[in-house]
Image (cartoon, rainbow, N blue to C red; front, top):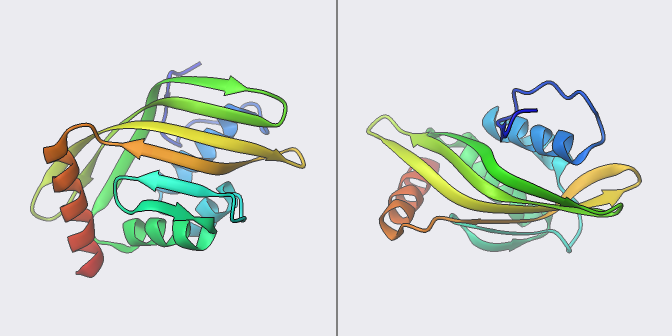
Length: 154
């Protein structure tokens, strides 16, 4: 079993926590908003705290962040590693790190993000209900925010 998830993995056991994570990273790295929408709980319970937009609640707000990333001219790639999955029958939390990059026509920024994702089991399907991502380095955070927001407005 690989200790890195980037969305290119074959899903050997559909319906598992690992499969839900693979599906999320596939949607993210392939910039597929409809697939991303299928990964998330569509409820006011859903929340996301990320380096780009503060706290977002509900799919509409969360989806707008992904839409900016996916439709901007910057290319963003992340993979999940150094993680643990804590699972019960109805919920799981995956906590670890993401690494990757953001590329623009002008430069490339290497990313280092602490990440946790919480999923809820809804009728046998794992749906993400919370994501928290943090960039520890203030300079990296400022460069990342500036690059993505500039590309979204370009």
